[in-house]
Image (cartoon, rainbow, N blue to C red; front, top):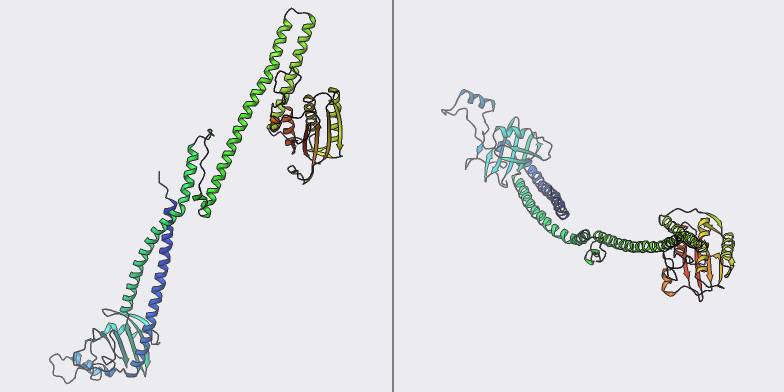
Length: 519
């Protein structure tokens, strides 16, 4: 498996590459500027030399290495005589260094000529040229003269290369029917440019390497908080999240106060850890509630089952008809109690599964009147009254509303003594009550069930809407008590319709407010 490169390494190499590229551009630009400046100075010198040569230079100034036609030299030949005749009795010097003490004109070897200066003159088909080299004048050979003869006579600077003599910057012009060319050797410029490039390239390499190492150290320092984030994440991954006894490790201030990007990652990780812990706590609470629910449900079902089993065995014995009838009635009563308990648990299970309820306009006052009438039939020893009742419709499920009212009145009937006054009222919810989801602001309806009984014990007020919570903890109620699920069903139904239920403060008795969205 190929090892992936680290982010710090990639960033430091990218930084070094960017610095190197910038230095390359700088070296190229500075080299071009330096060479252009030196060429500009050289062209100015060429212009000065061109003016001077136009004023003083002449072919006749060239050293006279003539061959006399009357010379008795042993080297004379017919070809030499013809060359002398064709040239008017004169033959140009074939090239080579000036003989010490030989003739020197103002154009070739005269005073004021600098080292590396080139001069060339052509007139009437005759051409001569020389270059000052090593503090002596070297005359040009035929190939060099041929190259210079082809330089345009436009007075502009040109670059030519002469074999064995080097590269020259030259300018040529026509003065009095004579072609005059002057030049300056460019080898010094090339040497300076090469030296400048070598120095700058060397310094650039040193700077790029130093930038790479410095950048790597800087990047590592800036990315150090990411290591803290990684360590925290690795610690969480190595733990058994099923064990919630130990708190999860969070990212410290070193990362959260670092660079913005790293701080965002660290903050997101801490938020994720908070969410995980919150989920673990809610799961633990849910599991605890589930275990308690199963235990309570098992106990609630076991009690009537034991009664059914005992009375069934009694009915099988040889007893009188009255005892057998009583046993069968108790079996029927306990069966009905179990059926009611199972139905309530199924209702809670469906609500826990987010079962969708209807959302339609419901007239609440007729439902309240029906519930009060039923309660009066079941418990005529209580006073059942309708309090304030505004003509308001509720947006919800009619069957769920009936069950809420039935459970609240049944709770008041079971847990209050005879003679207790129970009042049901309907009104707009006061300001400050949070509206349900998808409901306009201040469009909530409050259904209040209040009694003047002994009230709910203080030790269970915080748990009154939990499952299997009853004011009387006894489980042997002979089928006449509460299962402890009624208030939990009320809370679940109200929440499913987008509302809520709460136990209101009261000086006497019990006051329960159910808030639902208005139609």
